[in-house]
Amino acid sequence: LAAGAPAQPWESLGAALGEAYQVADDIRDLVADAAAIGKPTGQDASHGRPNAATQWGMAPTVRRFRQLVTRAVDAIPSCRGRAGMQALVRSEGERLVPTRLCRQLIEEAAA
Image: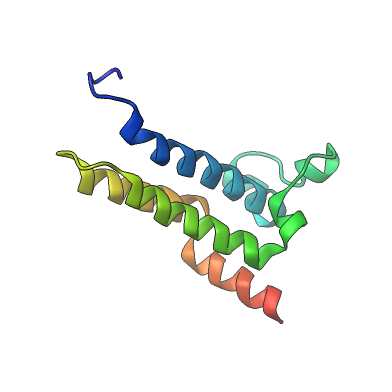
C-alpha cells in the first residue's frame, strides 16, 4: 500500500513469511545457542507456551519451515524486484535455520 500497489497480491507472501518466522523461532528456541541468536532459549517450555517442534516433532517442523520458505519465495508477485526479493527471502530463511542444521535435525530425528 505504501508503494501505491494493491495489497492483495502480497497477502500470501505475508502469511507464509509470518508462519515461517514463528516456526523458525520454535526450532531455534529448542536447539539454538542463546549467545548466537542474541536471546535466551528454552523460553517456550519455561513459560508454558506452545512450540511447533515440541508438538509435531523436530523433523516435521523443519520440513514445514522449508515448505513455508519455498511458499513465500513462490508467492512474491510479478514485479520489477521479484528476483531480488526471492533471494532475500531465501537468505533470511537460511539465516534463521541454516540448511546444514535442517539436515542435521532431520537425521537426528530419524535416528
